[in-house]
Length: 226
Image (cartoon, rainbow, N blue to C red):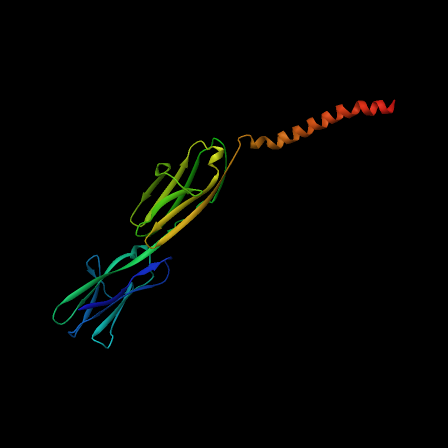
């Protein structure tokens, strides 16, 4: 038995169906293909559809369709072929999932100097995504954020205590795996803690300027009147 080819699937969304395929050839007739996952044989059902056909040249092509695919369907599947002489050959075929955002990331913060900042991001994917954070184009140390994960999900939180004006920037939360990547960008604006007083200060300045002008020009007007 020889493997002719196999097809993995890389998903960017979890909707609809997806199909894995493998094909074998043999100089012995009677090829039979079995699909397995976690060493359990897969049968056609409401979840799976298996169609195997002879290619007309001593070979066989088998397609496994996963119906209504979800994240728990991601991973490795075994396609195993056996001929009448009981010789077997197997190959591993995988469903990969690009990182997909979970929930909605707040993409804008406007905070005052001295406040604290916490940015949360979450994604799912297979293989489990890795996480990096950037401030502008600079990669941040992993001591500035926390990350927790499960089989398919990863959550990360970037924390900045006592914001400084120089902390204003575009922050990027980047999830990557071998299937692809996903980036969330968060705009952080840091303003002076005097900012709430600026309107009142502006009005006060106007009164001061008006007072100076009154004091300066009033004697001139009195002289002209005399």
